[in-house]
Length: 138
Image (cartoon, one colour):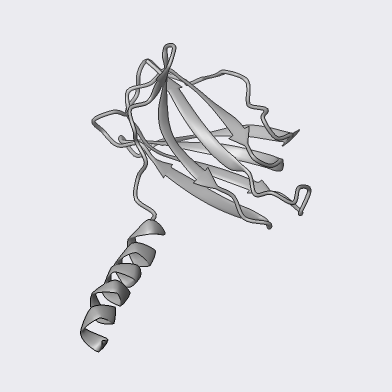
């Protein structure tokens, strides 16, 4: 009996461990000219989340994000470039579920984006946690 349960338990531990792994999510999904760069599910507090873009896919001129599932208060977005510089974008706005940002034109011409940091809070404005989807356009 123990021999049959052990593989099942090991499989369950493996699944739980790696299903919550916070690796970069760059699925290559496209919606028109926009490419999905990554997604993060937000928490119910003042928090920050990072979406790693990387040098291979990081040459974008415009960014935007969309929410699904819940609402949140976005404070700012900080774009970190591969050359070490960063661009802080104030987004002080309450976004409802299924809403999104304006198109954000980045300074410079197709600079390599290393990562994008979101600073937000949800203050339990919704019973559902929002998911932020970040899109880039070349």
